[in-house]
Length: 369
Ligand SMILES: *Cc1c(COP(=O)(O)O)cnc(C)c1O
Image (cartoon, rainbow, N blue to C red; front, side):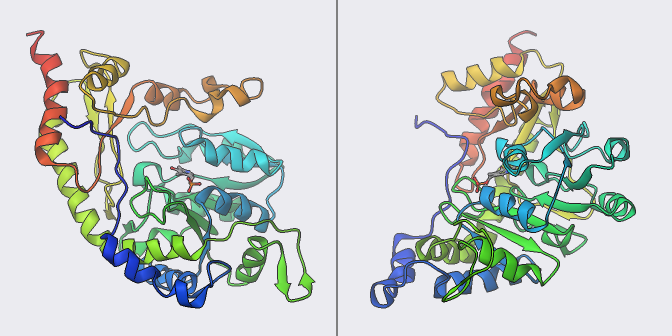
């Protein structure tokens, strides 16, 4: 039987992509805001139901540049239950991450705890829409207004998600989306920033291109984080198919639910009120199950099925931060990180394969009885 990876990148038909890139052999315009780039930006504004989208070579740089463009200083409140990127982006900007714990049910930032962490050095909150679960955006908004803090969402997992019909890109001052190969929508590598203040467009567009604003003018100390035309072409093709991909992901998600719903010691994600999901991940928390998370991970690997301990380790326990932060500050995040496993989920995962994966997990229960 073929190995099952935790994810498999969405790709258009080869012919569809070749057709999309054909023009590049005539224009010879391969990067620097070409026509594919311009088109993808405007199509994404439409798809994400938002007004300002700017593309990046990857999601991480979009976040780093957003932090710089919004002039954050001092301390930034965030969570450790995320990919290394979120914390690194704060630290690489010379700022101090202050770790807030997460909710035990949706793994997003615990808003009740936020106000206690605010000091006179706090400039912003960078919450994460983990697994596509949406943070308590209204309460974060209220607190941010009260203390005059900026909010940048790490929305890497939340492509296309809506809350009461509103695009998730519209919350906070800015949101970062990742279009990495493993995400629901990909441009091979890539990302985007969405933002509220239209004045930021010129600032951010200059930042991602060395600060260049005219043929002979360089107004800021920018870097290079431009998306190229091949990435944008991949994006245009994948965007045409993304709704279909999400429908297929939903079927995978529901098959897992049917299989695992009633098993003791297995905690599954719950749908959030008013949220239209993108079915990005299938996280399972083994909490009082007969086997530990690590044992389930190993049992699946034994059958050539690759699940992922995501997110583990927490970013506040990474080697590079050992002297500075500790996972003990965030006990709920620590508890979840030790028990969570994301199971394989991608549009073309077959229903029989899901049954087989779940069968391996369930066999561990029945063998005891
Ligand atoms: C993927 C991801 C990123 C980084 O995005 P890249 O496009 O890979 O740079 C940041 N945060 C989270 C939560 C992610 O999952």
